[in-house]
Image (cartoon, rainbow, N blue to C red; front, side, top):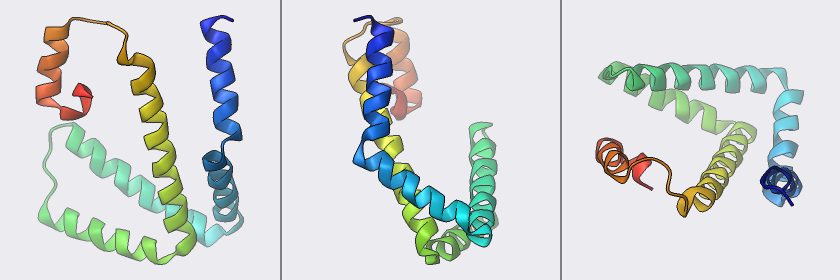
Length: 126
């Protein structure tokens, strides 16, 4: 079996996993409720805007942080959105773990550079 065939098989296993099936179920609930979907999308847009600002090296103001924290609280009051975000995060963690397993024994790049990058961004050193 080729590496690509194994990757497709893994993708199929992920699609059939209880975690992904539960995520799809809750995603359909979000999509079925226009108000909930709009609230979630508005929240995610704001989240991505703030993350992009940080990635460009800009510091978030206290006001931006406070407003976003209040927005998180409001969004979390909606049980469906809270569940969706929780399941989305679980999937992201699972996919990240799988990526680490796959690349863990591979020696790609130069160790010195990877160590330097890891010191600058601890997420890269895992």
